Image (cartoon, rainbow, N blue to C red; front, top):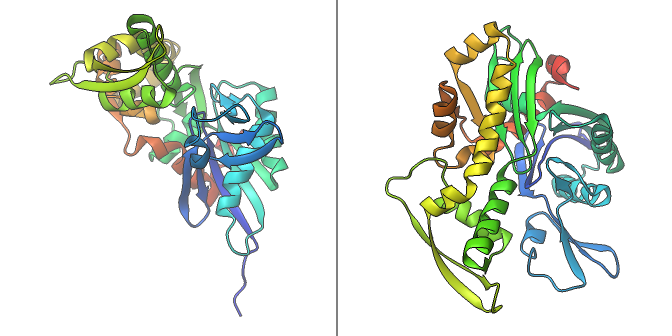
Length: 336
């Protein structure tokens, strides 16, 4: 008679925009929006993840959608717990009732108080043992870099709320730079631009669509055009507007520059020997922001170092967190 485990081990990439869950022995089983919808009058959670996202910006006064994470850290503890609980319940199938171990990745620049908040949230949803790992380290492991060796590797992980930049060698982060600018800041710049220059109010999801479809850091050949729907801020009436990739590039240029400035600052603080490794090996881009057209070329031109977009950059962090989960003893040195 076979022995059946009544517990599971999970790895979580708790992101500002999306949360990904990896189950030991199964791989990535879940990728959903980091959002919770709840009823204000009863304080009852109505939906989490992608189900809550369909309600976002379309609710009435009794229903509110909340993103519990802001700039990569927990801003609403209660809703963050509901999010983690709801998503982990989705992976606790059949007889599996207990989470034995949970590995969660966190931004490298967060405070001890913020670390404790993440750990507490994981323990409140039933995780018996909680391990924390910094996002850039998880991303490096996820894309197969040799973090145990005395070789310098540079990772730039552009997430929804933060951009994490780190130089890694010998299982440790030698230099890191964490800026609370990422994909959400790009969306916000697009929203602001259309409101200011065209009196057009658009939703967050429309801004994200513009970014994904025609957003770019460098010239596009050919330049693209997109029709978008919004609300005229002076009349309140629905309105259709035409925009171009060139206009969007101008709208987001300051945010892109802020990310590149952080990369430059990190390189300036890097010891010369590790700097020569990076010059030889290049910089690796991960996270959703790595998918912005021409982002790699733009950074490369500014720092004069080759820049490469990792394979499947959106899942790099959770794949690394999953690798750690599969073999915790090997990665004890990289855990926080």
